[in-house]
Amino acid sequence: MSEDTPSISIFFSDEFKNRLRILAKRYRSIRNDLQPLIDQLQLGNFIGDQISGTKYTVFKVRLKNSDIQKGKSSGYRVIYQLQNNSCILMILIYSKSDEADISATQIREIIERFR
Image (cartoon, rainbow, N blue to C red; front, side):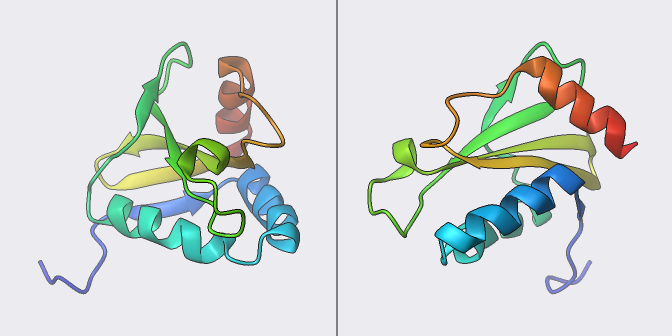
């Protein structure tokens, strides 16, 4: 397999795209902050903490928001689903300052709408 070819396909839910667009209006560097995570996932490095209670293999990753200079704890949260070893669904992105947490029910609903 070539190093240049991503081995994992990444898809984005409508909720992820909408929230990214809204956040990008406030945080100009969000796409640059997100790109290293996407690169890691495409290489097969499934990082983050697994979320239980969704009946799916779902992870939450903390990302630094380089626009506010406060570190990962005040940055973004990205929730993604590992559908299989070659496919990932980016479920949700949000700013920790906007929302404390997302429920397992909300995550399940987004995944089911995507299908």
